[in-house]
Image (tube, rainbow, N blue to C red; front, side, top):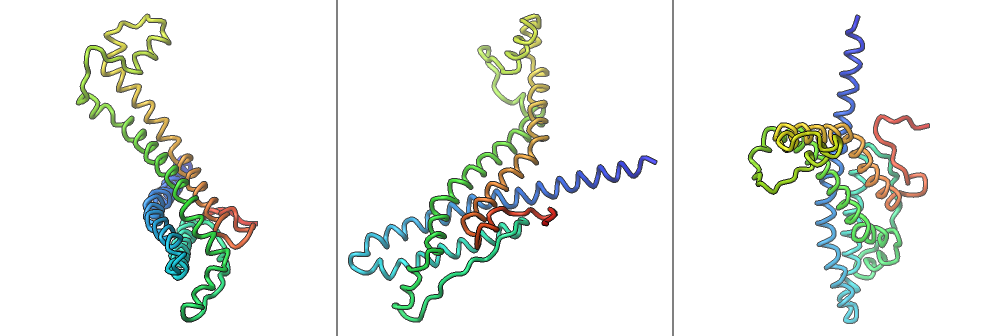
Length: 236
C-alpha cells in the first residue's frame, strides 16, 4: 500500500536531480564561453576603432559584428537546449565584396549582439558562475567536513564559529573543551552543508533563470521572447 507514495517520492527526486543537472550544464559553461567572447571581441573592436582613421578598421568592423553574431547564436542555442523559448530575430543581409560587407554596419541587431556579448553577458555569467561554485563548495565541504576537517591545522588561538555560536546560545554554560571539540565543529559544518544542499536546486534554478532571461530579453526577436519558459512548464 505504501509503494505508490514511495514511487511518487522517487519520481519527484529524479525530476529535481534532472532539473539540477540541466541548470548546472547551462550555468557553468556560460562563464567560459563569455570569457572567450570577451577577450576576443574587445581587442578586435578596439583595434577596429583605432584603425578606422586609415580605413582598416572600417573593413574590420563587419568581421567583429559577424563574430559577435556567432556568439549570440551560441547564446540562443544554449537557452533553447536548457529548455527556454527564444524566437530567432531577423538580420539584415550583407552583399558581396567589401561594399556589401559594410551593410552589416547598418544592422542594429548585430550591434546589440556585440553589446550583449561584451558588456552584459560576461558580468552576468561571472556572477552566476561564482555563486554556483560557492554554493556547490558549501554543500560538498559542509556535508563531508567530518572526513577531512581533522587535517586542518588547529592552533591554541583558534576560535571556531561553531564554538562561538554554541557559547552564545548557552550563555557560556558549555565547557570550552566541548564547545571547541572536533565533534561539535563537524556537526555544525554538516548542518550548514545540509542547508546549502537543500537550497542548491532553488539557487541553481534562479541563476539559470537570470542568465536565460537576460539572454532572451537582449537577443530575442521581440518582447514576447523576453521571458524563457523552462522545459516541462505549461505554456498557455
